[in-house]
Length: 196
Image (cartoon, rainbow, N blue to C red):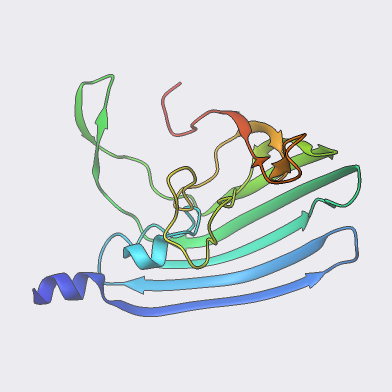
C-alpha cells in the first residue's frame, strides 16, 4: 500500500500563464508547466484533460500560442491558431503491441523536445463551419475544466491532423419554434503514430 501511494504522490505542480489580447484580430498566451512525480507516468489527475501535453512523470515545458476566435455573430468569419510546446520530458520505456510483428516490442521512441500542438484554420458561413489541421476540441455538452470527459471527445490525447465540418453550435430545427435543436460534425483524420 505504501508503494502505491508513493508512486502516485505528486511532489510539485507549477503552472504559470500570461494571456493578453494583441488586438481585436488575435490573442496570445504563454505558459510554463512543471510537474514532478515519483512514477514513470504522470498520475491521472495531472495528465487528464491536457490534450496529451503531460504524460510522463517529470516535465518542464514552455508553451506559446496565438489564436483568433470565430465571430459567431457575423455571417462569415474565420479563425486560426498555432501552438508550440518545448522543454524537457522524462523518458518512458514500455512495451507496445506491433501488429506487423504480431507481438509486443519495446517502444524505441522518446518524447520530442519540441512539437507543434495546434496548427489549424477555420472558416464559418452562417451556421456551418469547416476546420483543417491540428486542433484541440472541447466537448459540446460538458465543461472540460469541471468534468472527467464524455463519451465522444477525450481531452487526454494530442490532436490529430484532420478535416472537420458541421454546425457551429446547436441550431434550431425549422418549424419547431426553437424547441428542437441539432448539432453535428463530420471528421476525417489520420493518426500519426502508425507505420506508413
